[in-house]
Length: 169
Image (cartoon, rainbow, N blue to C red; front, side, top):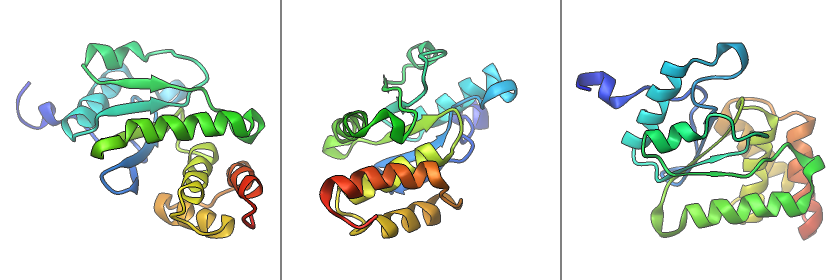
Protein backbone atom coordinates (compact mmCIF):
# COMPACT_ATOMS: atom_id res chain seq x y z
CA UNK A 1 0.00 0.00 0.00
CA UNK A 2 1.09 3.51 -0.71
CA UNK A 3 -0.01 7.02 0.00
CA UNK A 4 -2.95 7.81 2.22
CA UNK A 5 -4.26 4.22 2.12
CA UNK A 6 -1.13 3.06 3.92
CA UNK A 7 -2.13 5.39 6.75
CA UNK A 8 -5.55 3.79 7.31
CA UNK A 9 -8.58 5.72 8.59
CA UNK A 10 -9.39 7.06 12.04
CA UNK A 11 -11.86 4.84 13.95
CA UNK A 12 -15.26 6.43 14.53
CA UNK A 13 -15.60 8.22 17.82
CA UNK A 14 -11.83 8.22 18.39
CA UNK A 15 -11.07 10.27 21.51
CA UNK A 16 -8.06 10.58 23.77
CA UNK A 17 -8.90 10.04 27.44
CA UNK A 18 -5.30 10.46 28.59
CA UNK A 19 -3.28 11.97 25.74
CA UNK A 20 -0.77 9.56 24.20
CA UNK A 21 -1.74 6.83 26.67
CA UNK A 22 -5.44 5.82 26.58
CA UNK A 23 -7.95 6.40 23.80
CA UNK A 24 -11.44 5.10 23.08
CA UNK A 25 -13.44 4.50 19.92
CA UNK A 26 -16.21 2.52 18.35
CA UNK A 27 -15.23 -1.02 17.35
CA UNK A 28 -13.02 -0.93 14.23
CA UNK A 29 -15.23 -1.55 11.22
CA UNK A 30 -18.35 -0.17 12.86
CA UNK A 31 -21.20 -1.78 14.69
CA UNK A 32 -24.16 -3.91 13.74
CA UNK A 33 -25.39 -3.75 10.16
CA UNK A 34 -22.99 -0.88 9.42
CA UNK A 35 -19.92 -3.08 10.09
CA UNK A 36 -17.64 -3.28 7.06
CA UNK A 37 -14.62 -5.55 6.64
CA UNK A 38 -12.59 -3.09 4.55
CA UNK A 39 -13.28 -0.28 7.00
CA UNK A 40 -12.23 -2.58 9.88
CA UNK A 41 -8.91 -3.29 8.15
CA UNK A 42 -8.28 0.39 7.41
CA UNK A 43 -9.06 1.39 10.98
CA UNK A 44 -6.79 -1.28 12.44
CA UNK A 45 -4.03 -0.08 10.10
CA UNK A 46 -4.58 3.48 11.39
CA UNK A 47 -4.37 2.27 15.00
CA UNK A 48 -1.13 0.41 14.27
CA UNK A 49 0.42 3.21 12.18
CA UNK A 50 -0.38 5.82 14.84
CA UNK A 51 1.73 4.19 17.52
CA UNK A 52 -0.77 2.21 19.51
CA UNK A 53 0.80 -0.77 21.20
CA UNK A 54 -2.41 -2.63 21.92
CA UNK A 55 -6.18 -2.70 21.62
CA UNK A 56 -8.43 -3.68 24.53
CA UNK A 57 -11.78 -5.06 23.38
CA UNK A 58 -14.64 -5.01 25.88
CA UNK A 59 -17.02 -6.82 23.51
CA UNK A 60 -19.08 -9.71 24.85
CA UNK A 61 -17.67 -12.04 22.19
CA UNK A 62 -14.26 -12.49 20.59
CA UNK A 63 -15.75 -12.20 17.09
CA UNK A 64 -13.32 -10.60 14.57
CA UNK A 65 -10.45 -10.27 17.07
CA UNK A 66 -8.31 -12.48 14.81
CA UNK A 67 -8.19 -9.51 12.43
CA UNK A 68 -5.79 -7.79 14.82
CA UNK A 69 -3.43 -10.76 14.51
CA UNK A 70 -3.65 -10.66 10.70
CA UNK A 71 -2.64 -6.98 10.75
CA UNK A 72 0.06 -7.50 13.41
CA UNK A 73 -1.71 -5.50 16.12
CA UNK A 74 -1.55 -6.72 19.72
CA UNK A 75 -4.88 -7.05 21.50
CA UNK A 76 -6.54 -8.09 24.75
CA UNK A 77 -10.13 -9.07 25.41
CA UNK A 78 -12.08 -8.61 28.63
CA UNK A 79 -15.85 -8.71 28.17
CA UNK A 80 -17.39 -5.82 30.09
CA UNK A 81 -21.08 -4.99 29.88
CA UNK A 82 -21.45 -2.38 32.60
CA UNK A 83 -22.01 -1.95 36.30
CA UNK A 84 -24.00 -5.19 36.52
CA UNK A 85 -20.72 -7.05 35.83
CA UNK A 86 -19.60 -5.86 39.25
CA UNK A 87 -16.63 -4.16 40.84
CA UNK A 88 -14.35 -7.22 40.50
CA UNK A 89 -14.75 -7.24 36.70
CA UNK A 90 -14.29 -3.47 36.58
CA UNK A 91 -11.07 -3.78 38.57
CA UNK A 92 -9.88 -6.51 36.18
CA UNK A 93 -10.37 -4.08 33.28
CA UNK A 94 -8.48 -1.37 35.19
CA UNK A 95 -5.58 -3.76 35.89
CA UNK A 96 -5.38 -4.65 32.20
CA UNK A 97 -5.39 -0.99 31.18
CA UNK A 98 -2.58 -0.35 33.67
CA UNK A 99 -0.60 -3.32 32.29
CA UNK A 100 -1.12 -2.18 28.70
CA UNK A 101 0.01 1.39 29.41
CA UNK A 102 3.15 0.73 31.46
CA UNK A 103 6.39 2.21 30.15
CA UNK A 104 4.60 4.80 28.04
CA UNK A 105 2.67 2.30 25.93
CA UNK A 106 -0.58 3.34 24.26
CA UNK A 107 -3.89 1.46 24.27
CA UNK A 108 -7.17 1.91 22.41
CA UNK A 109 -10.24 0.69 24.32
CA UNK A 110 -13.44 -0.17 22.46
CA UNK A 111 -16.82 -1.85 22.58
CA UNK A 112 -19.36 -2.15 19.77
CA UNK A 113 -20.24 1.55 20.07
CA UNK A 114 -18.74 4.47 21.92
CA UNK A 115 -21.53 4.46 24.49
CA UNK A 116 -22.24 4.93 28.19
CA UNK A 117 -20.39 1.75 29.13
CA UNK A 118 -17.10 2.85 27.56
CA UNK A 119 -17.47 6.48 28.64
CA UNK A 120 -18.50 5.49 32.18
CA UNK A 121 -15.58 3.09 32.37
CA UNK A 122 -13.21 5.89 31.45
CA UNK A 123 -14.76 8.23 34.03
CA UNK A 124 -14.41 5.48 36.63
CA UNK A 125 -10.78 4.96 35.59
CA UNK A 126 -10.06 8.67 36.03
CA UNK A 127 -11.61 8.54 39.50
CA UNK A 128 -9.73 5.39 40.49
CA UNK A 129 -6.37 6.82 39.40
CA UNK A 130 -6.98 10.13 41.17
CA UNK A 131 -7.04 12.13 37.94
CA UNK A 132 -10.58 13.14 38.92
CA UNK A 133 -11.09 13.78 42.65
CA UNK A 134 -14.81 12.96 42.89
CA UNK A 135 -17.42 10.91 41.08
CA UNK A 136 -19.30 13.96 39.73
CA UNK A 137 -16.06 15.47 38.42
CA UNK A 138 -15.09 12.14 36.81
CA UNK A 139 -18.46 12.04 35.05
CA UNK A 140 -18.10 15.63 33.89
CA UNK A 141 -14.59 15.04 32.54
CA UNK A 142 -15.73 11.90 30.70
CA UNK A 143 -18.58 13.89 29.15
CA UNK A 144 -16.29 16.71 28.09
CA UNK A 145 -13.66 14.41 26.61
CA UNK A 146 -16.11 12.27 24.63
CA UNK A 147 -18.51 15.10 23.74
CA UNK A 148 -21.53 13.09 24.86
CA UNK A 149 -23.74 13.18 27.94
CA UNK A 150 -23.23 10.32 30.36
CA UNK A 151 -26.47 8.47 31.00
CA UNK A 152 -27.45 6.20 33.86
CA UNK A 153 -25.40 3.15 32.73
CA UNK A 154 -22.20 5.23 32.67
CA UNK A 155 -22.96 7.01 35.91
CA UNK A 156 -23.59 3.66 37.56
CA UNK A 157 -20.08 2.47 36.57
CA UNK A 158 -18.48 5.59 38.06
CA UNK A 159 -20.65 5.03 41.13
CA UNK A 160 -19.11 1.58 41.68
CA UNK A 161 -15.68 3.15 42.10
CA UNK A 162 -17.00 6.09 44.12
CA UNK A 163 -18.76 3.72 46.54
CA UNK A 164 -15.70 1.48 46.87
CA UNK A 165 -13.34 4.30 47.83
CA UNK A 166 -15.74 6.48 49.78
CA UNK A 167 -15.84 9.27 47.16
CA UNK A 168 -19.11 11.01 46.54
CA UNK A 169 -20.65 9.77 43.34
